[in-house]
Image (cartoon, rainbow, N blue to C red):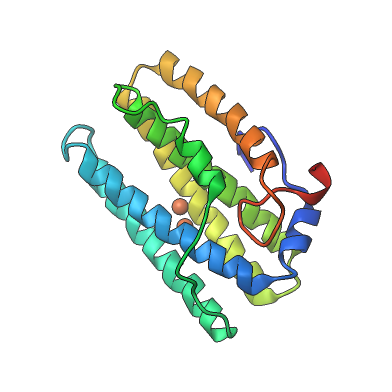
Length: 200
Ligand SMILES: [Fe+2]
Ligand SMILES: [Fe+2]
């Protein structure tokens, strides 16, 4: 897979988090919800016509994420789990701290951070598909990986459309390096963006 990530998740991470598949699905549902909200937020925050395809792209991503959320929720409920009300995602929160708020770079950073979360999610889903012995989950994670891969490419392409290439490239390298550091510092546990036990 053509992902630019600076660290690779070992299969052991997948086996460890799949020991609590319901908790993993709960965390995952929040992730999809956040992704849908993020796309709509980007859409409304910047003018509709400032980049060709802005509204179409963001509504398309939001629609995909809403569909993912519905799928995760269906799986969760069918397997006897239930959604929780409160959720923490220190990984995404720390990534968002990299965004240069109130500057011309803000939209570039938001697009790059979005691209990165998509890329890492895709990588994690592919590890989960490989680590799971459950056919339904394998198919599910594989399908999500390919959808998030598409989103990663869309966000990255948009980042290069809204600002000069050199600046975007430099910023992209910076957030890629930061992401690997942030992910590694996460505690292990049944979450999509948790740390790897052995790496700590
Ligand atoms: Fe998704
Ligand atoms: Fe996505």
